[in-house]
Length: 135
Image 1: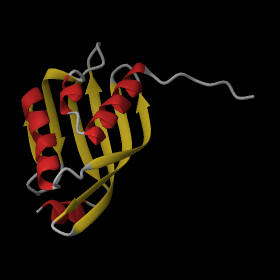
Image 2 (image 1 turned 135 degrees about the vertical axis):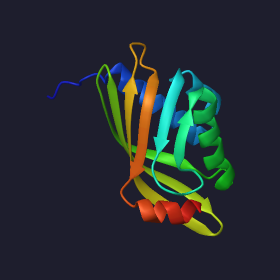
Image 3 (image 1 turned 180 degrees about the horizontal axis):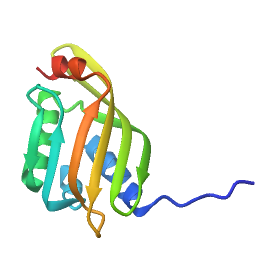
Image 4 (image 1 turned 30 degrees about the horizontal axis):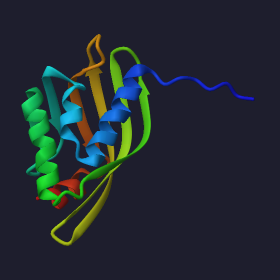
């Protein structure tokens, strides 16, 4: 019988963050972020760019909900984590202006000693499709 291996605490925190996002609970996400967090979102759409600080990060997530009329959610496939990094493989789902998207995504994050995200990069496997969807 295979022995069950416990998830790294940073993987647990990341999973909690994605679950909170899918519930629309942006307040719960704040505690997972370093005060000076920076998020880099690839692409050239209205949701792309660099977002600085907790307010900037939450503002980006709020924009995703606003542009998708609250339909944005993420299906997590796998989380890889250690003491300083977290990688999340997922599919982002949303509806907008009569269109739907299911985009494969990758998030790579640096974390501090408390497991809070200090810097994060978000990109996907179809950047042109994602840009078109959000534009």
